Length: 544
Ligand code: G16
Image 1: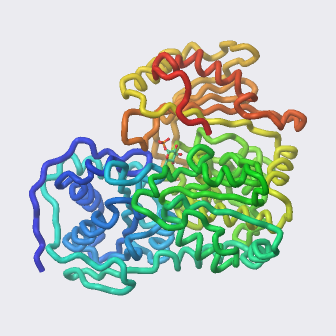
Image 2 (image 1 turned 60 degrees about the vertical axis):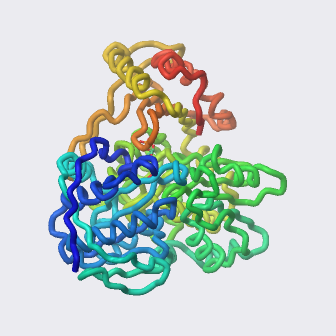
Image 3 (image 1 turned 45 degrees about the vertical axis):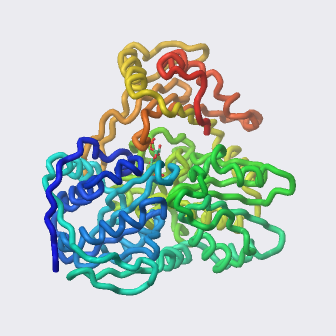
């Protein structure tokens, strides 16, 4: 066995963001760049010798090359076995499922999620721990610390593994098992939902659905589940072939980027149900006929209807949402008499709550919903959950959401993103907000009075760890909120995110366009944060 120890120099920019390390492909292709980060992961772990590692990615450009390097490094560092998805493919929730099912030590997931792929686009890598979830901050901080002092990495000299054949191989002393990418995940989904009822819905000749996999990783999963297991007509899954550049698309399931699907669902003779997922399969968008479900509402509706799905028949332990996500789920939790947790942005903060049995469902406004079945958000799980609810209630998506608003009131919600802002400008905007923070309480803006203004800090109720500076919140006395934060997933410049929320209890006022309902808050956000001035932009680049 020929294990080489290769000298290297640290790179200064390997600090993991909201979800792992994301950079442009050419950055990862620099000599030793990927290798350094992988070695930094291994060096931050203890006790993995002889253990199992799961490896897979969303199939984007550089996925296969990166996997070959990781396999040889895992072998050289003493892992006993690696499970890798065929063709290097594992959706993020499927990777979480495989880690848990096989009691693996951890996993490496290769993805830049919803960001475009291709030779000059984005790539990413993150480490998931043995519970199947993204490494918590103390682990990512340890990885970053290792990356700053690394002086060598270990690599087995060997030829590449054939990733396209399911089977077992040897790489030095280490076993490599190439597994079917879909099987374990599909089995898990079948154990959670009422497949007979969903099959009846999808084959009754009246209900039509359309699933847009956006040429990203969920294509094979969606085809297996909807077209093969549940009997939906062939062609139900569109853009189902995973491509290295996602067909030059932007695999982000929102109203702007999933335009193929939006045109169909908002066109003539639209189907009853539409859904899309992102690059690595953890995000989802749910549409009814000519109707968009905001991710915040989706979490609330699923929570309110959870007992219709076999897995959640006995009720929920609690709900968790990220801080900028609307408070619609809080109202459901209150009615159900269960706790609702508010965490910083990023799925890694839900792991402890799920492990401790404090929360069953989790969600983020950024098109992420999930439960304790894995430790990642899960796009196709959300689609199946919605189908289960529609099948059980025999109502349209629109009717279900409108009834929900009647019961709980409507939380109008929108996020305005300013992308590609120069970092200095974005930092100045945040600094100016910090300066104003102490003087805002009690201030009047039209009919709105500021109740509180702070930079969100979270104390994990399970391990007591504290995460500070997670976004500036301005809360008003009527429960409305404006939140400002900088993205931690971008690869170029900075992205300023502005989250806006107001509450409308009266059903007679539930029919407004959110941009109209939120117009006063939009002006207040501009007045307080001087967004145009600091970003040098007249309007947001993306509104969701
Ligand atoms: C964004 C979203 C977060 C989400 C994160 C990772 O982070 O705002 O809610 O957790 O992406 O999502 P994914 O794994 O799908 O990329 P940020 O920091 O850019 O706002």
